[in-house]
Image 1: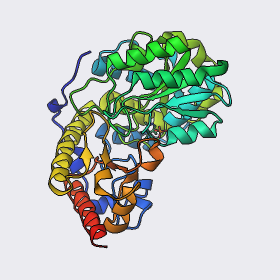
Image 2: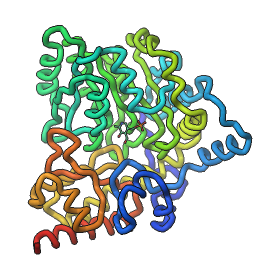
Image 3: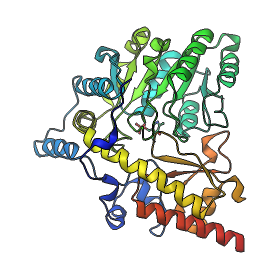
Length: 397
Ligand SMILES: Cc1ncc(COP(=O)(O)O)c(C=O)c1O
């Protein structure tokens, strides 16, 4: 697959564009969940202004009163072109896509197509907590196949989970997070092919959440699940929401492999009534005209990964942090600090800095915290200063 180096963008680093004062005026979840004295580095929102083409398109739409219902395939076409250019994957067929309200509701709809009530869904903890919440809410059973200690998929563990899931003739699915939240692991073509082979052997259907796909920061190459041998029966969810910070402008795409087209065709038409016209517009423009902005962001995130590594080595060397190759999330193993199962609580109470608790991420989450590094270097420095102060304070108590 071809790799476009992100160093080539002429755009300024969007992570340096906003002051803390202006960010504190935001009214979204990241900024309004905790009191003003807490520095928020938790939920996956980024401290960036929007890419200029997105702002322009939305502003023009508002000025024109163009706020009706969405129609057409422009979003899918933009994603297909992005996939071809970015990942060298020409297999995204617009006729095998459907617009869905957002990625998690898309996941639910895809799981409904391939499983029934009470059926098992395999997940790879530690993993994005809504994988548990949404799957259970739709009356499916979560089966865990934990990642290995190296943060990678473990084929032996996955096979055991698949075997358990299909026992008694149940229909089973594997909800794959690719790239993986929270570890930032980018699954290789070999690993994904092994998943596809196991899925084929056990009759398990794979639903791949690929929302973080444009956010590859390190040396790895993102490989679309549907592009690997055996991935033809897969279903994928993609969106511009994480990479361009568009969570408030909901719209995502469900994509079917060639052998899953009939499944996607069974998705009820009313699901397509969820996304908003402005959401579809914003996501389309981001994918089509927002790549220079994305490249500047990736360069900034790469610098932040290194900065966080250095800051932790200097001030909190007991924390184990292995920078992943994707996402803007840092998965911190704090067990050696002796702060108990929920170090994020200690950082919040004693340091006034908000990270995500590792506990809701499932098996492997205890003693861990997730830090959102999509912030300015100054905010990262302040966060580590506060975490250090929290550790010092608890040591003194
Ligand atoms: C893996 C993963 N899937 C889904 C989502 C949420 O996406 P959406 O808001 O489109 O449902 C997130 C948000 O952080 C995520 O990390």
